[in-house]
Image 1: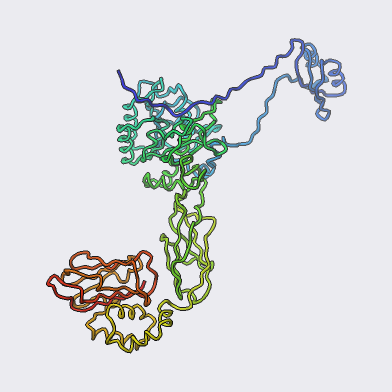
Image 2 (image 1 turned 30 degrees about the vertical axis):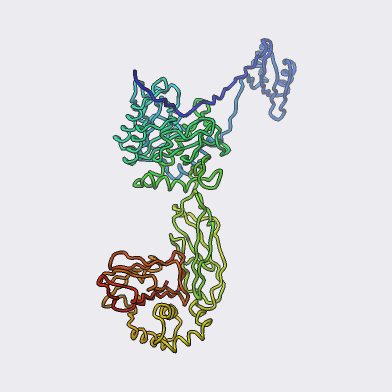
Length: 609
């Protein structure tokens, strides 16, 4: 006996019952509207009626109840222009879209020819009936049932939403190449082999997007393997979340990470009561009381899915080489955040549409360094944002100075001791800016950190320069070289001469090599945050008491010195390192080579950050 997994199409019908109230007119009288030509005609009407309801004098028209004999006489009367007994129904001639299409702003897509031309879309479903507007659908059946027979009208409704060319109820993307892959039999059942056959067919025929308005509550490895194969083949898959009327988890295959899970909302953009929820939910779309050509209203996450499928198909039309991951991320640019900020279990990222959404503003913007002519800023986005961010536009005093992908930035060439307004605006991957900038006002320092240190320590610095021959190599020389950006030329020369006499080699971005040592990466220290010091002789041991790092006269904490290999020491700066002049001194006394000897000279390395 054939084994079936309990699959089901994710839908149900909210049948819109239409009651026709038939007027039970008396056999002796009938309502009619009569137009007369002149006063004689009006007089004849007044003599031949059972009751007058309205007299429209300007129109020479009377509405009332008449017997069949009276109407027969009035029709023959030359003073009567017309006797009308039919119930004439008038309709508005506006071209309002069904609410689900209006909510997606599909008119924008149609006016910009975003109708998924040349995109191959498949749907694993119950087949598609022959219906006006669905003539171009390619129908394939993988079960013992006619591909043109859809007893439940489920697949037919999905196809209508996707690609109908019917002018009264158009599809979202009518130019897509739509393939109806029937895997459900006439009893609304599909075996796992039917699902696998459908996925296999989709891969064989190079489909771009696959609509799966179906699901099962259990996770089966066979299903997941098939889904993984489809993703590897480049197929973007969209599936229904489920209709369990409770806080039940997302159905499979929607719950797989390779698949886009879609939930349902109603006309008011509220969560549909029946729609399942969970962390796997990615988007929501209209799925409650969706109008159809059969005068029925369809509800279910099954009918939310094709709204998202069609939108992805139009993106694929615009960007045919994009991967599934990039399409999924980019779709968030057209997603209206509903419910809690960012992605949540009820709405996912939110409602997809053709309306480009602006990203959220920054959540934080602060300075982590303020110098004489520069400031360094840090900024961040709120957690779990819907619209993805590509870069940040930076403004100083109303003028854009930089667009960067970094979340820290060093702003230079500012006036000393002056106020500046700094603003940052996030820019989405679709190029749209946030509606609001986040800004701060900062005042640059009166002096550099080095200048401030020298002014505060005048006496001690004078004493140090008077006794350079007795200065401590590790502490004093790291201090001196970390202040060299504010020292006079004569003092720098005196300092270099004394360092040479103390058997020290001085390295910087202008001189990176000595006879026994070489430093790298000094020009890229602000970006890389580390420098390698390579020796010609292998090292045996390096004690922490042999080195010191200072910035603008002050000792730096949190840095690390580690051996990369026997010949390379790596100096790594702390994550919160501030801009300024840095000096690293390695004292030779406690550094031993593998031959148990000291290195040739003390090493002084200075650089800018």
